[in-house]
Length: 248
Length: 248
DNA sequence: CTAAAATTCTAACGAACGTTCGAAAAATCG
DNA sequence: CGATTTTTCGAACGTTCGTTAGAATTTTAG
Image (cartoon, rainbow over all chains, first blue to last red; front, top):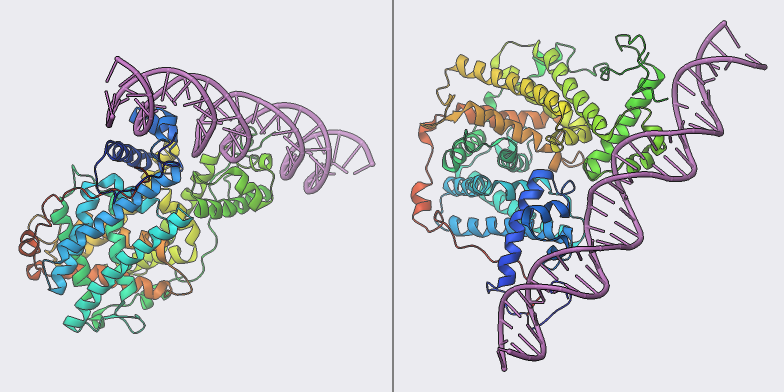
């Protein structure tokens, strides 16, 4: 009888480390690897069975569906990142330092848990049911934390270049934060531990770009208006050819 | 008899706009939508058949496999972006302006051809055979163009904060360029035309962050060393609990 | 040691997948 | 028009998919 679906006993606070728990988290590690390597849709339960050495049916003793498996991975990864962030943020009250802590925390996790982070970023909008809604809520919470940090910085330094809207020049908070997430979440596509710097240096580099990027006085920015509009580049270009085909 | 696989006549330079070509590119538009909405692996040929109104077998008259379909989309999107970029870059010799043109070109395409851009970014490493190798080459070419623009800027302004390596503070060229790609390629996950600014403003915001980020004199950067190491946050944290389970 | 509970397995289910065959229909052209 | 080519389609192919029933085995506890 499948424990994950039917048995429903005392339900202790689940803070123990039972045999079942250990096996499940072992499976989650294998699943993270398979999902990272082949994508959620591209990976099959048979791939996971082969890699983990557990029979196909044996897997289903620990979770009830492939979807739940992805949910477990993403939920665990996300809450771990947020928990660590909260602990680390307690160490400073300086707005700039706190943003650097935020970036370091995120980059550090991306570097040390590359596959989990890839599954979190790349399979972002796969889950559609209640799992998806819950993960979306966690994501929004994480986003709001970052917005708060940026607003603290802007307030403290009176950065008029960071504003809710970017109408008159300067950078909107939303674009800034999303840009930062872009720099961090894109890591999984290019980071190679053997070639690239460690989390400390990488986090400093990204923080530098972001922080100094926000501190710009927007007045000095050049416009591409003149240069571009003088060419035909800005106008609607004629549709390009499709690739070659084999026909007469 | 399937024209795409067997017939092999005169093979004119394929610069015409035949009935076949028009139908194929119509199918590619539908396929772009399906792949963007459900992911390449998650989308089925039956989904495409339903959306396009063409029978399952009818589709295969125009291409020989699902893989080739993805290749067509990605190859066409990528070369279009590069072609437009080359035209637009001809309008200026100023290093900063040229980088702004690069960003605008990329952002503009992301905003106006959202779905195609999502397929290009999100299904980046799906193709493994010769298709994949060819696309990787195009990608490298695009990357090298951007590196060239950044190097021109650093040379022209004697930015000692932008260097091949980032050992002593400052930002390595690789991290800078990858960070820029991150900001731009992450767009597809959050950009909403109804809420967010148009390509012009968005491109200026991203360019501002990037350019002013690079121009920082790295000396003023704070370190999170002290703050973070004084807490237990930097150390290996005890493993967090997995999510709840239903057992006794 | 024995009985109960927890864990694992083999074998299979029906559904969905990418792709193809061969004939029907539509378009082209003398 | 009739002949030929181009385009479309219903029906099926073999394979793989996620999942499950039920028996066999291992672990746990008295």
